[in-house]
Length: 277
Length: 328
Image 1: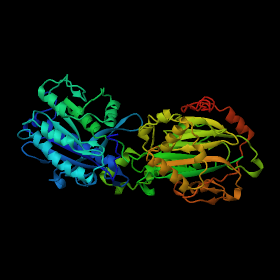
Image 2: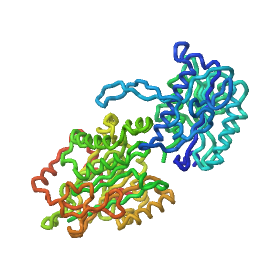
Image 3: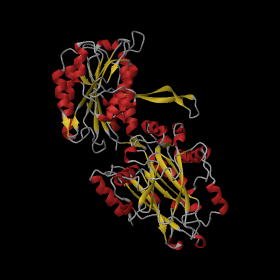
Image 4: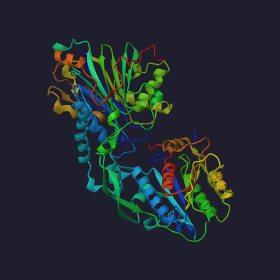
């Protein structure tokens, strides 16, 4: 059965995030009063990287279950890590853990174990800075992702297939269908590379998440992005259902009009491929 | 009737013994088995704290929720004190603050497994089990599966079992789901405690009409157990996971040959000879006895035991019966 390979230190898996860094990412989420999309996306991804690191932490060390890459596309298309990892395409999770640009301290409410909430200072490592400039060369990003993953798959032919999560707020410069098709044609013995697309929006209209049809999508561009998104494998589909999403047969890794909350949930569910070993 | 407890364990394939995160402990009157959750940190230490805590100092005969929570609290503190927090990098600290998680199954007898010579004609032994999660207890009687607890079908196992945490805040939803069961061990019976992978295989075999206890109860050393798990994993019949089992059967072994688990030495009588660390010993562990015989008054008290307050009683032995006629 496809998408059932155990993720282990011997057979790690790969997450590659493609992030839209075009000018419109400077606009706010949620109808003009929210956080800038570029800021929200950087926060969401920094938080996700932190969660992936913590998931792989074991005792005093960390197990390299994952390699992770972040490609930005806007004024330029290329690796988006800042700080010690700048310029790197794919980085083992242990190296991510040990190489944040800085570690900020933030306050969050936590359960005190007795029915109340208390403020706790938490560490917030930062690997990515918000960027918003120029156009949306999505096809170039897919093309670079293909190049990076082709090399990785050659070295890991039996691993759980790479998961590519593309986050964008607008229309691409040129039709990326060919590049996306080439990208998802890359396969390990456990299945094809997965491509999930999340469209984030400044609109307040209801998001469409993990649809199995393009009927509710407003235009050709959204339908195209839906068509380029991979069907959810069973284990990710089960995670989405457990989170309360109604998942129909053939549901795809696609979200339209996601706000910041939906983006965070999308990233969380999309990076839960299977149990670690 | 004296009873012998033997523990068997093997790490998941591809992992070293240092990565083994189940735990087994065998005390004078109780045994415990735990399955530390791979995705949590310091899970092995937590599983060991739980099993040693409950095997060496069993729950009372009438445990309520308060007692259970009070018994777990010092084990949580023990786990916490075992971590060098100031040496942890940020991610390890964040992970450890979430707590370690483990499924727990503990079984206590009202009297020691090995009775004093004068008393070993007792032909029934009362036991009391507590389960949090998917580690399972099976009782074999008359060459049939007589009882399965807390899960009774191979399809009932999933990837999100109930788990007891070393972090008190993570247990708020757990306590109400702890389950207890009391039962009787009769001559010829066998009790098997297993972590989830083996328990699921065991029930699958029973559902297919097989009698897997014939194989499991014949093991005399760890190698035979390891060989079976390796074969079953290769056939994709056993999930690749840490795999552990305790088998309790009648024995005629003389007292002088019985050894006690090291972790319980402080609470055992000095006549016993220590074994090496029980969960990691390459030879089967056997419990020693303390000479405390259950009194008639205690027996009567047991018979009259009320359902423990705050802990759900899954079923009486009769309700939970998995008799041969019901097994496929």
